Structures are given as C-alpha cells and as structure tokens.
Length: 258
Image 1 (tube, rainbow, N blue to C red):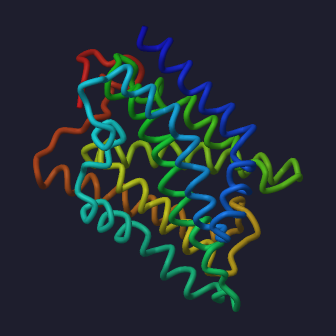
Image 2: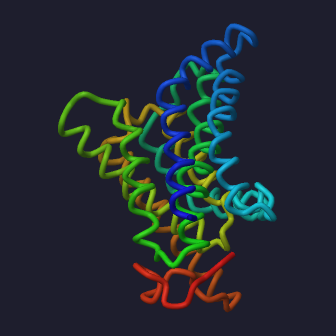
C-alpha cells in the first residue's frame, strides 16, 4: 500500500509538472507581473499531489516534519556556507563577476530552484523512502538521482556535454542526499548547499551550463570534500552515529525511522 500510494502520488505530480508547470507559470506571471512570484506559484501548485500523498500515508505527521523543514535552519546554513567557501574563494580568483545580474532570474535559478528541488528530490523522492522503509541509501537514492539528472538535460544539445551534465548532476544528487541524511535529516543543509553552489555559478562567469570547465569543477569538488570532512568531524565530535553504513547501503538490517 505504501509504495502504491507513493508511486501514484509522484506520478501525478510528475505529469502535472511536465504538462502544466509552464501554463501555471505564465498565468501567474500575467496576474502578478513577476517571473519570481510566478515560478514560486507554479512550484507550489504542482507540489500539491506530493503533499496529499504524504497526508494519506502519514495522516498524523505534519508536512514540515515529513519534508524535513522543521530542523535548525541556521545549522544547515552554516554547514553549507562553510562547505562552499572553496567555490567562493576559487571563483573570486579565477573568474570575473558577470556585469549584469537580473535579480528575478537570480532568485529563480538559486533560492527558488534549490528550495523546491530539494523538497521534491531529496525530502520526498529519496528521504521518505530512506526514512520510512527498509530500503537502504543506494536503493533509495537511485531513482531520485536519475530523475534529478534528467531534468537538467535541457542545458545542452551536445552529446558530450549532455553526458557530463547527467554524470555531474547524478553524483551531485547522491552527495546532497548524503549531506541531508548525515546532518540529522536537516533539509536546510541540502537547500543551502544547492543555493550557494548555484549562486556562485550564476554570479561568476564560470560556464554556460553545469558541465563547467576545469577550475569551475575543481572548486566544486573541493567544496564537496570540505563539507564531507566538516560533517564527519561534527558527527565524531558529538559522538553521533552515522546513518549510512555498510548495514544501510541496500537494505537496512535494522529499520531506521525518523
């Protein structure tokens, strides 16, 4: 029953997003005369099937809890900012800030996209499966990461670039999921990590798409390494056990519910 409702709910969301997102966005823009508000409105409306799905499966739990938005925002912000400092410093050295920044476009490509994509892919599609079923980390993360990579393929028509974009976003999704789970299911860690990475990519003249270049990807990978070390250090300092271990990679030997 759980998986049937879960799959059905996500399928309804997917088709609503695929066929009507642009329509809702354009209609909202004609009313509010703002691309940013229209983007948020379209995402909010298309999220309704996911919210209904969770209320059917977990009628006694609130939505902020199920979407992991009830965790400390400052903690997630601090972890993400610290982890992405190599990107900020490296890009300041190797790239120029773009001369014209359109604030609404920047908002859409950074904060709005990061917030809603993390809710959809990390909190719902990956987090719900990992938190409330016997599926392990890799089993839970596979479908969500494949879809996350697929939705970024609009950025290029070149086969080589498409392969690079798919690989980078697929692996990035797995890392975001790991950071989210190991920071005590704090989705704000993944949201702000996504936000800062997108922000630096947008405000510096790095690349036209996520496939990037040598320095663009070098500092991105350094940021991932730094955040990994910070999370591991914090968990060991606080003597907090790791959520993802050899016993929870494919099928959790002992079911973990959060």
